Image (cartoon, rainbow, N blue to C red; front, side, top):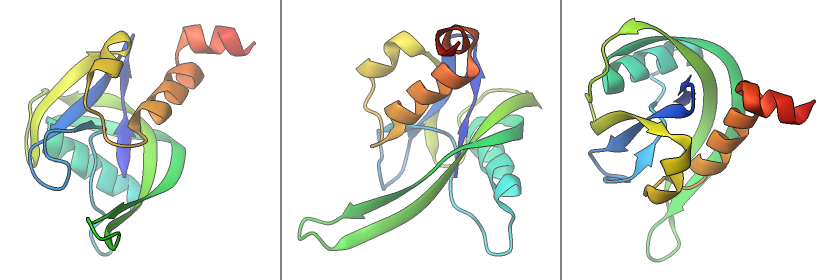
Amino acid sequence: MGALILRKDSILLVERGKAPLKGYWSLPGGVLEIGEQLKDAVVREVKEETGLDIAPVAVVEIFERIMRDKTGKPEYHYVLVDYMCKVTGGELRAGDDSSKAEWIKRKDLANLKLTEGTLPVIERTFERYTPAGKRREQ
């Protein structure tokens, strides 16, 4: 699961410090542990990767990502549940398997090496949850 956390014209992203996807920027989040509820997992993962305490607000999107090896054989298969979240405390710092945790301005997203599918969900989230986006929808 992943967390979409907006702050004005910026979103919180982490740079992956380990394989798979080392060096790519993505939403903070990670793997569900056996017996863990989805909302509890996103709270735990965001704390581990960014140092921030968050509260999930709503599910934004659910999608699959299948990553294949050089022969085309599935190597990783993820079912991703992305939550809109708000910060409730903590102090921003990179942790766990992230090498960086930063607020990235929307205008700078195209310059980053983002994981597949990340930019479209971020753009849809800005459109849906920011005042400028809501004005355009009316």
